[in-house]
Length: 84
Image (tube, rainbow, N blue to C red):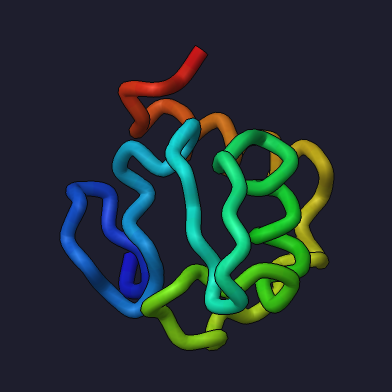
C-alpha cells in the first residue's frame, strides 16, 4: 500500500493499525469513533470527513460492491486491538 500503513507509520493517509475503535479528530475540529459506519463512509466518500493533519487526497472508492467494502472494513478491523 502506498497511502495507508498497517504498522502505525505515517504515510499520505492515516495508518490502519488500531484505527477501528479509535477516536478521530477532523480538520474542522469535530471528532468521532472510527466504527464500521465511519470506515464505510471514508471509503466511498472520503472528502466527507478529513482527518486532522492529512491532506484531502483520497479518491472515492464508490465503485466497490457492498461485499468488497465489507471485506475492506473487516480487514481494517482485523488490524485493531479495539476490534469486537
